[in-house]
Length: 146
Image 1 (tube, helix red, strand yellow):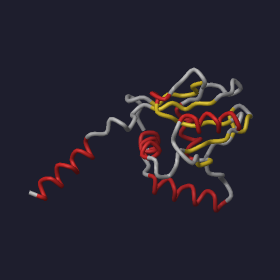
Image 2 (image 1 turned 120 degrees about the vertical axis):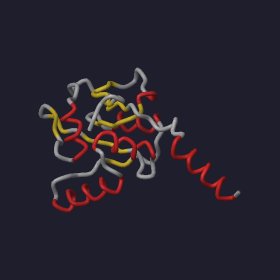
Image 3 (image 1 turned 180 degrees about the vertical axis):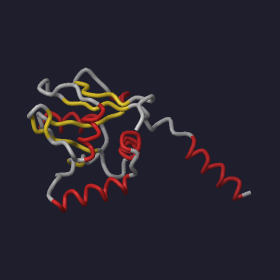
């Protein structure tokens, strides 16, 4: 009986993920940045792009423990958190990349405050967190592929 209950709970956790978004928005609060292309977004988050139209941008990441962060990187780049950490460690060690600023929690107030403090800041959020306080640079929807 205990095994059945354990398997049932495991299946429920694996297959019932309504709180994990499949749609993300890359946002900012500045009007100086243009809308981003798929290639630009992937290059930004892979650490291969730090300027857009001559403007240096700063990226923010949700906390390392965030399931939203893990799902975002899987959807955008097909990478796990461990793979992203390894990529960024290599880039940081070589001096080619400054990793995104890691926010201390995953709520919209923290994100909004960080964007206020960083005029060229860019961050990803689930689309259902969107408000009229931010500007959408890119949308990663269900139909987008890797």
